[in-house]
Image (tube, rainbow, N blue to C red; front, side, top):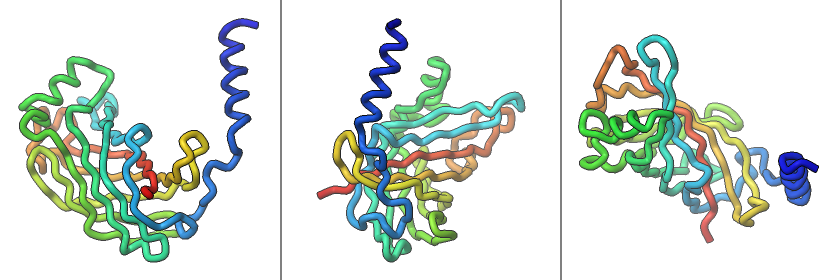
Length: 202
């Protein structure tokens, strides 16, 4: 058996040995309420901009930290606070990565973190909500909103920790935060797509 085929067979065998239903809760109402912490390994803050009218160019921030106070019975009572280290920014260009961390863009040395702190949670459907909050980037704080969709929850079969996950989307104008280099050639509007994983704390 070739090595690649053997590796695939091994991976499938391992996957088959895990519980089939890792996501025990398919409805937000079934999720365990409580105090959660961001699981940074599987949380990503993705962004994209229209680059010179040619492509929607994307990048990602990682190493996110923060907390979620989740009230499944009364979602409006839930709250979220996250911190994003700006220096974690990554694109497909090493040169651009360095530029984005510099003073003409995010100025990661002076403003090392971006933060989002929720101010309200409003349900818009069984698995959907609009989360309003204060977003701080580049030392500037503005009110912004995110559309949040519940993905699922349950005990992670690998680390045995109760985990819940969401997807959030939104748009912001980077010039509102003092990051305006190359506008309008590189679009002022930034599209956000966030994968958020949270682990319940004991």
